[in-house]
Amino acid sequence: MDQELLMKQIVEQVMQTMKNSGAASAPAASAGAKVTAQNYPLSENMADKIKTPTGKPFTSLSYDKVISGEITADDMRISPETLEMQAQVAESVNREAFAGNLRRAAELISVPDDRLLEIYNALRPYRSTKQELVDIANELDQKYGAKTAAALVREAADVYEQRGRLKKF
Image (cartoon, rainbow, N blue to C red; front, side, top):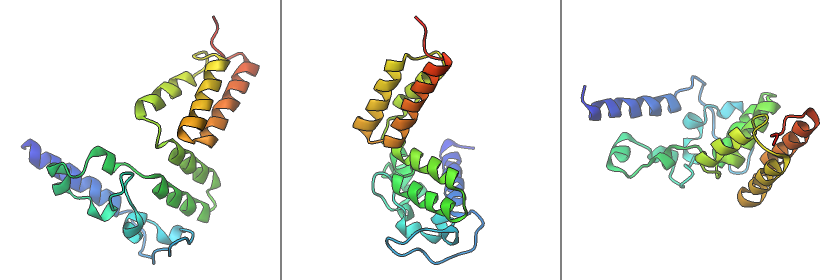
């Protein structure tokens, strides 16, 4: 199988998976209204409301645009607004913890992937000093506006200190 045909099949499969989640059609929520389980899957029932982080409409994503370079990897990522809609769906079925996770993920979208991996590694026990964790929290808060994630890192710094899990010199 040639590479172009394989790429086309993969892109079409991803797009089909994004569109098909098995829920019945429901009317899209009006602007400003809460999104509920009736709107799920969003890619089917609210496709016209979903945009990529770069501002492209979800409905504009296609294999041909990927191949031509008009659509990039950044266009295929989820946006904070879509994660918020997903969080509202989760809340509508009493999945508040999951909704919180989605909102924290939305906060972290602006953090570059390589930096997220560095932060993840820094949060492992014995990898960072308390000051290093506080500095990470301040960066998340001030540079990226990720206030909830920053609060969690500050909490981790305190807990690691209490439990003796900070980096030892």
